[in-house]
Amino acid sequence: MRILVLCHEYPPIGGGGGRVAQDICTGLAVRGHDVRLVTAAFGSLPAEEVQNGVTIYRLKSGRKQEFRAPLGAMAGYLLAGLPFCLNLIRRWRPDVIHVHFAVPAGALGLALKILTGVPYVITAHLGDVPGGVPEKTGKWFQFIYPLTPPIWRKAAAVCAVSSFTSHLAEEAYPGISPVVIPNGVDTHDYDPGEITVNDPPQVVFAGRFVPQKNPLQVVYALNEVKDLPWTCVMAGDGALKPDVEALVNSLGLRSRFTFPGWLTPTGVKDWFAKSDILFLPSLSEGLPVVGVQGMAMGLALLLSRAGGNPDLVNAPSNGYLFDPDDTAGFSSALRGWLTDREVLQHTRLASREAAEIFSLERIVAKYENVLMNASK
Image 1 (cartoon, one colour):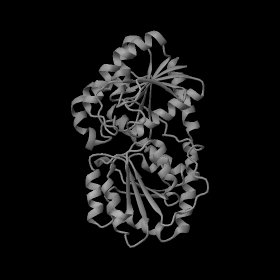
Image 2 (tube, rainbow, N blue to C red):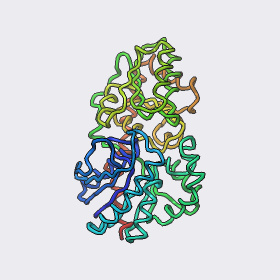
Image 3 (cartoon, rainbow, N blue to C red):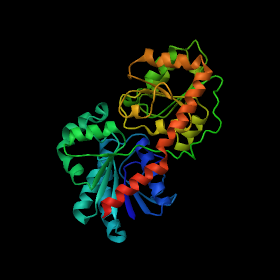
Image 4 (cartoon, rainbow, N blue to C red):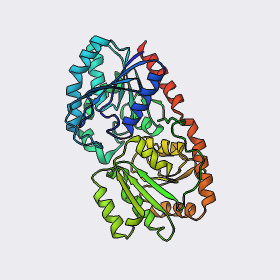
């Protein structure tokens, strides 16, 4: 198949959704498909290149931050993408279009379907669904929701990364029945080798420093167990980073925290390899890519109950789930692991074992089937 992929963010920029797109594109290319992706330009990244068999085109959209794409940058992606993709389709003639995020890329997929007849498949990640990330997109959907139903209903197929995301889409767009295909991980690439607990144990947070990811909760919970030995790495960037660092300093915990900044996926994996516990107290999630990657690296999972997170945790086997504001719950789980290294090691081993069901090879095969059926 010739597959045109649309996603407004793609590594090294963007969050988990872009990394999901990268994994699927690479997996489809390995299977012999001709995959070409149209994404947003940023900084000095080349306008065109080939990575792992995937041809990448980057278009100027006005994006100015690695970790965030405001509404204006999304609109810029659509404006630049329409003429570019029309020209590409005429020259190359793809069999199907794979859209990551119903908003904004779904609007481009719909326009291309109308103008060229090429069918498109949507993968919904969460923030592109009304109610998915209300603190981030609630105001947007008040205005753009009336424009979005055709994007979903004209798609040849709709996929969702978690049962939670699928449920939200069904509620917002009656008649839509998404196929749930979770985010995957290359369990060969993400292989921790022998799993042993660090001395002292290390907690890791990886994500954007924004309200949705609730990074301040990491500090509050760890402060409750400051009488025990531990270190913490908080990787990422965003508007709340100064607040997080200020809180760490005010509590006298600066020597225990490391802030490496925004990292590539390889950089995140390197920190996972040195850590024991993945702490993600998010207010909302589709199915966090770093959660699946953390499982594969054999990290004990300490997650909020938000969104698709329950799909990753079989408590207490490989981790625990608490409400995002439950500092006492999070700190209690931490205290249990930090005072019993044997239990922490068993939890880590169970996490690695559970990751096999999210094997990227299985996930790519499912997408291949959906895309092939849509192209007929």
